[in-house]
Length: 91
Ligand SMILES: [Zn+2]
Image 1: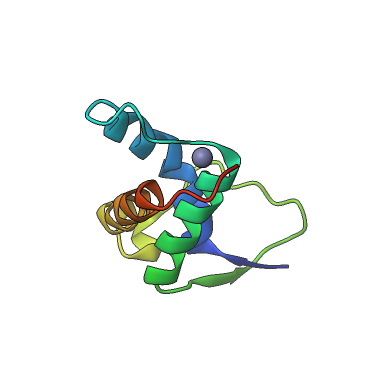
Image 2: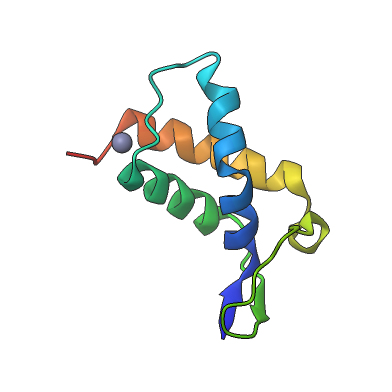
């Protein structure tokens, strides 16, 4: 099964980044729609890093060095939050 490791890494830090940003901007939405929109924006900016996995394989610890470092992932997510917050598409 093919997986984009950048996606795994972005999902891993998503809640952490949202919690940090909410200290300054408590209005930031983390609903399912906004979450997926933010991840889509972030992942479209990050180079895809496809890996082959076994079905159901769980990644207990994400190795950020495989996707250009944690800071890179966080920066892309922050960009995503800014964009989605300006034009939220949730109901
Ligand atoms: Zn929302």
